[in-house]
Length: 288
Image (cartoon, rainbow, N blue to C red; front, side):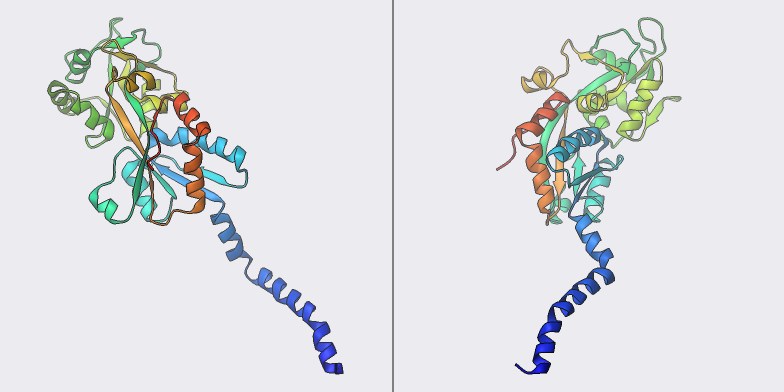
């Protein structure tokens, strides 16, 4: 071998090392960003499911400590889907099935649970149950005080919000009472599920609606009422004696990452299903 070839051969390992070092030094930001993107799962959407996602995320991270779970503050079902389409979240949480337009954008909705839709009062209110007729009277303003003479402070949600839609579907009288409530003055209006629960906790004599999963997952100090003699729970929801609920969906995009699929696998695993059951969900079997 010639002297020049020997020099060239001897130089090659150093050249490779220099190229590698140069690449790392010149492009660390893009490399690190790509690595970070593959190690984070971002979740956002309806406020009723956020605290449960944090609990699931904590359990998931015990098995996969190198994967971060980020749960954003309430975006609402519509906002979560918009964030998914914009690439700002990896999983959207929704209380509504997808519209035809959303399916046309190659989104997929996966039902993961149902949770009882409940009536609640301030935790110092000593009543334990209510009837649907009594709820109608509260919303239309016929009943304005509790049995102990404490004024009833009704908390409303916006007309198009899921809780309002469920209320109006309960009966014709309930629909009319809800519509009348919007013309009453001095009532509190909650924008998000978290604001709704905050008002119910803070205002003496409060009355409103929520979901069982949110109240349990957020450890809310509220008085959950039996309705028409039936206590809301996953069991009474399953046997049909408690008929009111919200359906909860994961919504994913057309190119869900391996990490997203890994998280969904965990949610539908025995460990994930146990967390859902303990936090007031009637779990749904994963579609095949």
